[in-house]
Image (cartoon, rainbow, N blue to C red):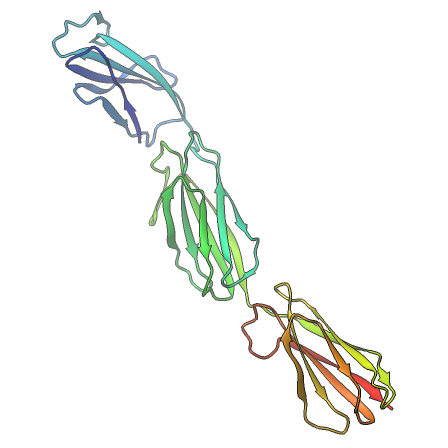
Length: 295
């Protein structure tokens, strides 16, 4: 729908009439006869594309009308032009920030961009959650081209976001069971479970002399983590022992400094546990071990 509104001055009792000249013709069409209504709403549905001319006439209710034409009489008029496009809007390009994938709980901005015949296009946002086949409306038509999604609670999998766009002068040239639109675009977005794929463990030095009090650095190196700054935990099994003991709880430090003072001769085992900073697990994502020989 396109609304044309006119105003006039120095006319105590104005009456308004609206005319239209479609493209490719010289015959004007009466859109709305003389009345006190200064607006005419034209339904452009089905109108062929092209340049249209519109004219608003005005005359005073008691006027003898100053000007007479083959179409009628008026005291004054104003003409405007408008263009009807076959495709009022191009298919919107849809982007996400941050880029996919991410972990549940991360705020995600879905933004659309479309070229339309007129300024101030309207955008509508839809979402299909992972594991479902039903689309749900998450943000109705507005001039806001961005939808901010709170992914808290989202299950791991692929979400789909659909964006509908309508030109400011359009009611939507396409129709579905969910509504009307001029063009659509979509983007998949993946939610992953935060984790680390693996970790390696090294010792430096790998052997010490008993009673020397040498310090040994145990280092973990995580790989394949979803997030930055993975957490490391260090365990130790003394020579000739079966039980592991926690020597350094989870921190962002990838090293543990072991003081070998008092260590019995034999092989000491060190275990490194790692988990992603956003991992839902309370234990570990991956682990590795290394040994130090005390002789």
